[in-house]
Image (cartoon, rainbow, N blue to C red; front, side):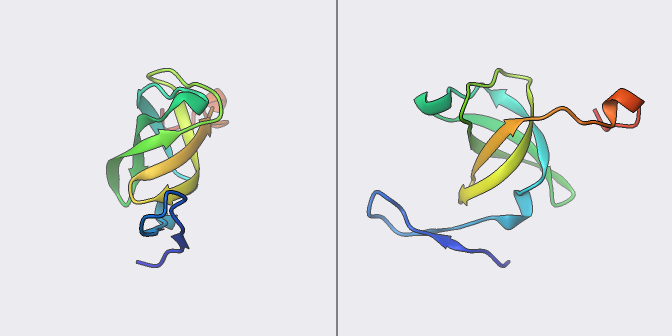
Length: 94
C-alpha cells in the first residue's frame, strides 16, 4: 500500500498516511468535539466498512454523515459534515 509519512509532533515515530480513505464517506459513531478531541467514524472503504478516530474543526454529533478530507496516519482521519447531493434526487446511497 502506498502512502506518505507524517512526522509525529510528539517526537514519536511517523505513521503512514492511508490515502485510500480520503474522499470516502461515513457516519459518526461517537461525536467529535472539535478542538476538544476526536470522535469515531465508520467509513465505507476497500469494499467494506472500517472504524477510525475522527477529528473535525467543529463538533459533529453521533449519526452525522461525513466526508474524509485527510488521513493523519494509522486509523486517524480528518472529516467534515457531508450531505450527498444525490440524496435530493433520490439517487444517493443513504
